[in-house]
Image (cartoon, rainbow, N blue to C red):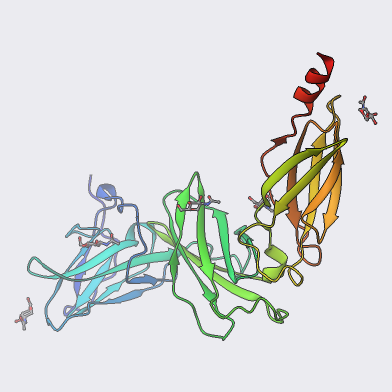
Length: 315
Ligand SMILES: *[C@@H]1O[C@H](CO)[C@@H](O)[C@H](O)[C@H]1NC(C)=O
Ligand SMILES: *[C@@H]1O[C@H](CO)[C@@H](O)[C@H](O)[C@H]1NC(C)=O
Ligand SMILES: *[C@@H]1O[C@H](CO)[C@@H](O)[C@H](O)[C@H]1NC(C)=O
Ligand SMILES: *[C@@H]1O[C@H](CO)[C@@H](O)[C@H](O)[C@H]1NC(C)=O
Ligand SMILES: *[C@@H]1O[C@H](CO)[C@@H](O)[C@H](O)[C@H]1NC(C)=O
């Protein structure tokens, strides 16, 4: 079934390629960020340049020589008239069958939303004050994302590709100029951008490392029975910065009594404590006592041998 040609006439020196809506070939979904892309205005014209010394080139859209868009090709320049959904995609220019250049053309995906933090829920977490952190966010499966950081010295970091796992994207960032000993005066700025086969989205997030710190759990929890008491000792998470006097940790021990009740004990600035010997099992977590209120995940439960002890006494 053909469609009428509702297009106004063009000057004869322009070559007009008209695609048919009904044979729309869907763009291949993206696996990585294309090296070259252009974001057009919805229903605006987009000018794509072929980077080449060739004077005459031919164009394909998503590998098809009969593009879905209304196009004007002139020398090395292609103008997409009125960017709509089927006009988005991968435009390649060729000299014969030699590929010269490719540009991915997309629409802005939220034309009505204000730019910035709206529309995307990014959550970031740092395991310590080393200037590295990880962010994750939810997004459609067919998209690709990347992010970059404005570093403490004011320069822009490299783009970091995000990886996808169970419906969420995540990426790790490092600010090599971050100083763990200085008070953060300005928030970090993280810029994220995403491409689907037809659309582009960009958003940024501002935050202080101190507000996103969540330590790893403490390590090497050891329990020793000493007479009527249990002696507990542990070490801070390996990722936590030194010196301990400056980067203090507040520890939370949770233990289970024989009747199943759980009780907590808090310890600050020490890496050992005593518990009553009836505790059946114990686990530990920690947080920064001064800034971020996020507790680490729990260490695994650690048995105390109390149950065996009671059985032995009963013999
Ligand atoms: C665009 O098309 C060209 C030519 O078919 C191909 O080499 C290139 O990988 C495509 N780019 C993307 C991002 O799909
Ligand atoms: C470019 O293509 C036009 C039209 O097909 C042709 O008239 C012209 O000679 C070509 N120019 C070159 C340098 O190949
Ligand atoms: C944002 O994402 C976090 C982490 O997945 C979630 O806990 C929170 O409820 C989300 N907030 C909104 C407003 O969607
Ligand atoms: C983020 O991606 C990395 C690499 O694919 C993976 O190892 C890690 O577990 C992911 N993190 C989250 C929170 O999904
Ligand atoms: C469990 O034992 C503890 C200490 O012996 C006691 O304080 C607590 O009330 C008991 N809880 C229940 C639910 O019996």
